[in-house]
Image (cartoon, rainbow, N blue to C red; front, side):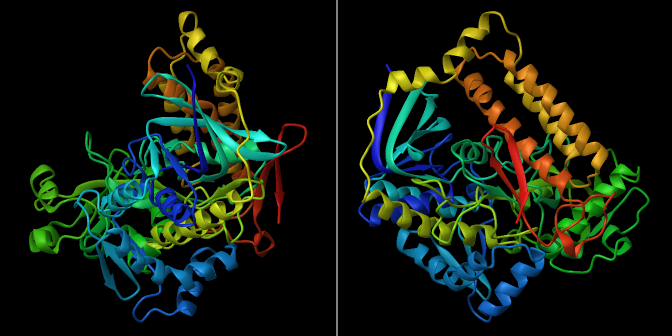
Length: 532
């Protein structure tokens, strides 16, 4: 039996953007369903974040905020969206208190209160609790693989229910896409393993445009100790410690990296410098060293401010006595779906908010702007979707008929004769992206990566799944491949270096590239790249 769930507004994704959109849509009179791959509010980038917001509060002015965002974005941001972020960020941030979020204000932003290892839960958990209290419906452990279309309009979605191991359909008057980014397409990432770019592929398949997909932010410093999670590092241990190569050379000093805080203002150039040291043989087993013994010993648990706990570093890593191994990780996608100031994608019935959207951050993002982005545009998008839904009617679909049009049964049928495991495909994809389309790029490697992915696409035709978990992984593969190809094609087309996009064969910024690369599905079924 295939179930169909109806609502005025369907939100895909239960991170900060999806939750804020759902709350606003319900406040505007819509019935709302939120569908997510993980339990609501968990295992998403918001939950794993350090909980820090950069916004116009205290002494920071709108003018300064806008200038900072566009300077870091290297001039290719959507200025309208940046101005909205500056104008509404502070108010939206303080508004979170109404939903049960504990917010500690400071000049230039705020910090939400949550567990030391996942401060972002201090945002997502209260939003989930508030949403439930308002009657918003959550359908968890679902992967969505395409939209239901009616005469060019999005009218719902098809997914797979991992709890019951069967297809499921959703009928809606409007859909909000809030699936996050695609950090898990890279071998090293601090993003949840399920952030495989579903939303980019879904939007592309529905006819929406995407922009700036070549711009991917790598966080320069994350743990790289064997068997330990790739926890990102910031705060005093980074600012006061030393980042050194195997020769003992101070890397920021060697590359004249002076803009601080390093984790906020020098993410791209420090990531590039560290990766250069590793690739040129001055690393320590594909890492560099963070020497912060004196800082660790001076700090105490109360003054600790990084994305993990003081005791873990003191006891597990012995960080007060010896250096720790660090290396960059994939952290954030600046590119994504093209939207207007209300989150409308240009495809009737389809809206988007959060990291899945492109344009706000340009070629690079300032630290703290991501969380401000999700609450500002989550609210705007939820309101806009609810308003659109008021003029629409639900389109009836026959759930079983719709589901059987999809490829779920094909994957299931292949298990007897095929022997390609989804994990094997994803593992190869992540290796290709890290080595050939990562922090340091060149035309030859990018073309090689594109060829490698095309071969992987052919191999993936033999995927099989013999469990719900494998089904989830198998359904992620085609979407992940699609997004990886977008990244590589855009990186190949941009023959310059700008922000987080660095090509050693075109190492300088070129004013002729002060424009955006736009990707869309062409009428002949091919991926079309244009500039605007």
